[in-house]
Image 1: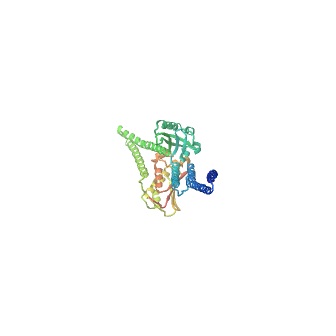
Image 2 (image 1 turned 90 degrees about the horizontal axis):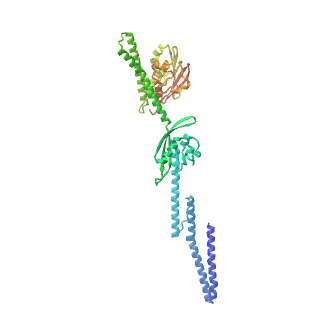
Image 3 (image 1 turned 135 degrees about the horizontal axis):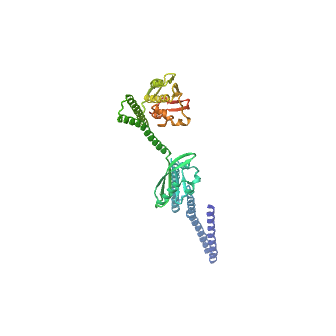
Length: 461
């Protein structure tokens, strides 16, 4: 470019020189003597002045304008680093300064736009909800990472495709159509199956507009509500189970009480039998309500443990003595093996509740003449306690469910022994409050072993 402009300058200079030579050729024959010399000097001087003026015009106007034009073309191409040379000439110098200021502003705006774009992309891509952006013609312009996780495929499989070609959900079609038609937010829910896992998704379709309030497309946001559905189902099951568990003793109490009130029973033994049944059922009802209240208390956010140093050897020994009379009624032998004095920091009454529940369960599910073994040892920063029995055992497929509320492996036996079905749920909550854990090993008709691990020191409680 510079070479071309320089060549043009020499061409223009040559043309002017030729014009002056022609003038010199025409004027000189009309003069003579000293006039001819003067005319020649005037023409040569005029040529020199014209060439110098032309060169100044080239340097101060033509060349800077060409440079500024080149800078503007670079800015148009998106090269915001381009700058024009700022000369000292008032006109072109100020023009170059203005162009450079414009370039700096454009570079700053471009940098800000890229930064905001990266931030927006990061936010969208790390949302915990799936997102799909559809333009006014129905083409997909954007899907985020969570959407890919929810529906599979790749981003390229959705980008610039008609939404109903890449989505196989009828409810989604209808929501998008309603959002376009009525220009209002539309809500719905779908069930999605992926890799054998069923998930529940709630979606919202919202139209978006430009500054002129013209519809530009629809944004679809998909929220995974699978966990909420599970919680809702657990709540329904819990209410149903509580109702069922309360119904049985209340029905028995009401039935026998009505019999005693309606019939004039003279048989004292029969009256005693009915009253005994009423007493046992009321006792069972009281135990159930007590366990429900305990479970509710443990699940409250404000629940706090009363931390103190606990002599676990003494606590476990006391627990064994409490259940020993019940074990002796079934001729069950309880073996207690603790090598030395064991201590930890925790809530002693709650920990005793854990081991009493485990021991009572072992007695209830062990046949007459069986054996229960309780042993404890310290390993690194943990206290490990095992409660083993020779009872009916637990099928492997059901081991993960035994900590659910009201879940019973043997429903008939559990009810006959007065169990509420909440013992292991309470055990799990107490251990979680102590940052502990419980593991189960069991073989059907051979017995079970519950292993409780509790940290010796609790922090932040």
